[in-house]
Image (cartoon, rainbow, N blue to C red; front, side, top):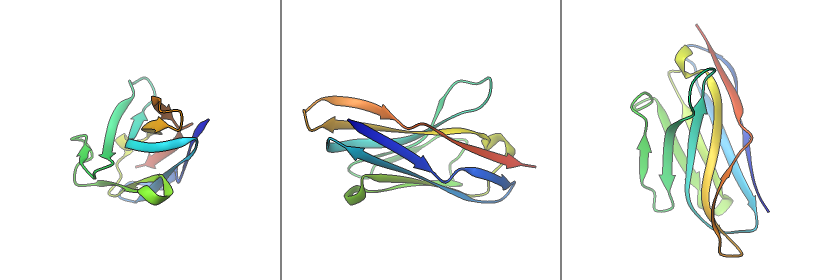
Length: 120
């Protein structure tokens, strides 16, 4: 079994910062990519940022220049540093890992989500 556990969400004022963490554990052989998605009430889930095992990074246009994704391969952990937060960043943030299990299956796993609320 594989588990993704997110942490770091909360309530922050506009202009503030938060750092999210996503730790993957279990029967993991290797992780190809780790990504952060978010879903605001009444909206579809959207990709925020993704980082590959080789360090390639991509961001949604709405967060470029404000958010930074990183990962610690030794700890199977991804981070999302969120700066200059805006009320429109309010959403549940989900971590997703595309990984190969010890049984050599290529699968996507999702975390349980963490709420980020930005007040104006």
